[in-house]
Image (cartoon, rainbow, N blue to C red):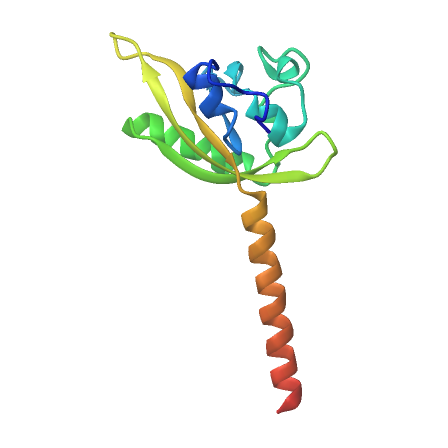
Length: 151
């Protein structure tokens, strides 16, 4: 992942390249128009960040699974209303077409007059965790089925 980084690599670049996810800054609009993304976005979704920045090819919001979009919007609205961070799990579309489970910790940035300027935060790839939980659940179901058939 970051084998090419050396002692002269700037702190932020070095640390963010180790994340299993990405940092972002976007507009507080319906498309979550991305202004900045760290390189982890490309590792997470296999989509060129340049395609998402400023909605060049598509918006970040278009990557959110349709079943999760309303919950993401609601979490952001509540966080902004309460001026607190939001924490939410949802799915992002990968370039290959499947969805990747992510966890987002985000919040608003306000100007001196109290107007919202940006949304920013961290998005972590949680797909490995969800896959592990699904496998564990499948094993538990299989064990339960064996136990009920043995009875």
